Length: 113
Length: 116
Image (cartoon, rainbow over all chains, first blue to last red; front, side, top):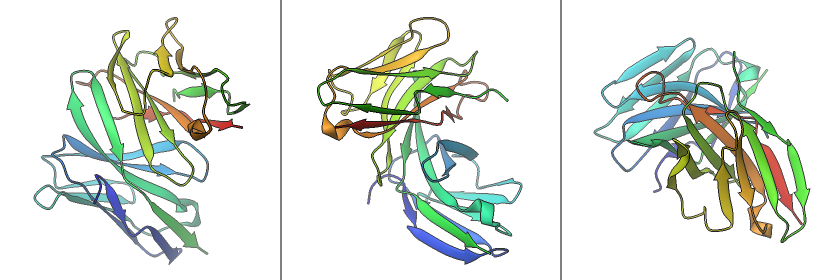
């Protein structure tokens, strides 16, 4: 599998339900980030988790990171129709010149009323 | 809240023509990036720029591509002779100093480039 593969590729749930998306990666990372993209629009940063962290929360978002399994999950609780978007994980390999982001294939989330 | 802006939002060009995509990163950010996303595919890293020079580039970023920060605010991506396969959404991003909140990259809304 390639660096940053999300699972599932598509997810359809009812409003109010929780949505869980998973991401696997292959190389050592400095941190892992989750981004959201509404159809045809730009990328919005959601949350960053460092390699020495195991779990992080931000509002209705919960991210976990398991570096031994090279995997991360994004949980959106109490989903809303406005959460409908594509969600990408991106790994960061830091070097002196900046942080190159390597994006996954994304999970398309559809939240229905 | 400050945002990264990009112009134009859409650009249609003929194969072989030169295009310049423009970005205004967030002021006081130090690192600048270009990514692209071909329709239905992953977002791919193209190039990073720091201290007025390219710090890393991908295999995609060949001699047809160049970047420039002509003044203190703009950051441009030039494609010298466009090909059909250059059709994609191009995203600019910036991040502040690494030791602060620098690990987060802030993306612009993108420029959709269509090469005919």
